[in-house]
Structures are given as C-alpha cells and as structure tokens.
Image (tube, rainbow, N blue to C red):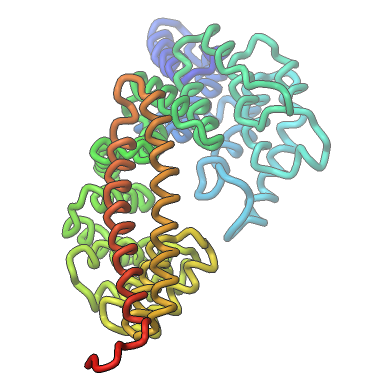
Length: 441
C-alpha cells in the first residue's frame, strides 16, 4: 500500500496496520511500517487539505521506538509549517531554507535504502536550492526504487523536462485510485491555460475526493473562468464553510458581483477589508464596482481612487474615471481615462467617455473625433466578439460554453447600442462645430 503511495492506499494501509496490531503478539514489529505509512498519510492529507485523520499523532505514539525516522518527522514538520510547502521566499525564508538543508543532509544517507526517506527527500527538495546546488537529478532518486509509485508521483510535482510529457496516465493505469494525479494534471492544465482539460481532471478528482479543499480551491476559479458563476459561488461557499480562506472569500465576492447580487457582494467586501493587507486593490476595486451599480456615487469614487493606490491597470483607471465623471469632476476624470488608454488603446469605453468630456467642454471638433474613434473601436470589438461567439458555438459540447456565449452576446448587444450612440454623438458634435448661420441665435 505504501509503495502505491496514493491517499486511499495510505489510508487503507493505516486501517490494516491498526487491525493487525490487535491480532499479533508483539505489535512493536509493525512500528516502522506504521510510522512510514502514517507520516506519508499526514503529508498527503495536508497537501490535499483533507480532514486530519490523526495519522501524525499515531506515528508520534511509537516515535521513540523508530529512531531512524527522526529526519522524516522533521521533514514533515517543515513541509506543513506556514510557508513550508511553497518556494523559499517571504518572512522567515532564510530560516526555513537552512532547516530544509539540514534535513536534506540527513536524508541524503537514507534515501538510497529507504523509499519513504526518498519520498520525503524529493518532496522537501522541491522547494529548496539544495538539488540545484548539488546538481542532483530527482529522477535518479526515483530510479533507486523503481517499484514505488509514490516516487513517480513525487516526480510529477517537478517541472517536466523539455519535450517530456508528464506520465499522468501511466500512473493512473497502475493505480486508478490515485486521485491526486487528477488534481495535479488539472493544476498543470490550468497554469497552461487549458480550461477544458483542467475542468475535466478536477471534476474527476472531486468525484473521488469530495472533501479535498485543495481540489475545490482549484476547481472554483475554473468554473469562474467558464462564467459558471452560480457553480463557482457554491464551491467558494463550500470552502468557506470549512474555515477562513481569504482567496475563496474574494472569489465569493466576485461571483456575487457578476450575479448582480451587489448588496451581498458589498457585505462580503466590507468583511474582507477588515484586513486590507491582502489584495487590497482587488477588494477596493470590486466594492467600488458594486457601489457604482447601486448609484452610490461618492462611496464608489472613494473606493475606486483608493484602489489605484494598490493597482495599476486600465480596468482600475477606467473605473476611477467613471466614478469621477459621475461626480462631475471632469478634469480629474479625463486624467484617469487618459491613463487607461495609455495602457490599453482599444479601451472603447474610455474613448467614449473622453468624447463626453470634450462635449461637456464644448470642444466640438475634438468631441467628434473622439466619438468617431469610439464608434470604430466598438465596431472592431463587436467583430472580434462575434468571431469568438462563432468559434465557441462550434466548440460547445454539452452546453459547457453556454454561459460564456451568453456573456459575449450580451456584451455585443451593449456595444452595438454604444456604437450607435457614439455615431449619433459624433454627428451632433460635427453640427455643433459648424459656424452659426447668419441671423441664427
């Protein structure tokens, strides 16, 4: 079971060892196997964010009888500590890095003979400069124990060599219960921009590991990416029901925003902004956006301009421009729209607002130019979105892309109205720019 290395394999092995210990005369003969299995199980539960089964405590109960395992206990403690599973950056990074290197030095002498030591060696080394400095090939560690699927899984956590596809299917063929492979495959696909594969693999992982917060935390943004906002909201709420999760909390607020549940979204964002240290720009941006939908003009302006202290992108500047325009602070609004257009020249909404500002200042030739530019911009955007609709409709299997298609069609309808409005405004600006006829008042 330990050799197979999957979560269910480790869990079943733990149950088997517990039952066997009650049947044999001297259960101490099982201590090494119990420790090896339970430490791997404890790590897997942490990685998958599953409920704690008490594996670490069971291993601790017999720790004194398995002295050789001290480096593995130490490795587990580092890996499950805050920041331990990630790359060695941030607060306390130098201390964590030194601790890793000390433990890796101890495991160096053990991994050739013990596959569990090899597993922790590979897992701990993934977040360390140790392998790089010593130019150690992780494949050589796994090759020392060729029958250990656990080590093949550990290798999948490393970036694949150029031109070498990850062996996800091979590992699943050997052990179909290896649901962790589906999660890893889904993550890799998501990072590569392949939402279709990511969703397929993550749903497969969720079916087998419904309690895994790690799976839910990756599946939720995939559903969000497909504009399945109701499904994404349900996933975010399921995550939050198990405890605080700032990223899921922000995702919930964004899903509520797109579902036009603006008051509820603001409640969530108010709660999130009790701690402005994490993603403050996103929090202020989305609260401003929702307040703008509710015509809370001054609060929207306050949040939108505060967001600019933490964000630097065309969306943030456009939102600040709209909020400022609604308060008739025209000169300030122009500055925000100009900044948005410097970052993204095809920001049709900002061009259209510039036209309105020109018209408000009775700069009719400039207004005509801006409105004509806006109309052309909307035409080009509509053409692009129409092509995208046609492509998605051709690819739409089982209705997966229905929400994306509906969103695009809604955008096209809105932009057609803005295109017509811009053309009418351009014509009016041209008329207003003409010299007054003699005798006209």
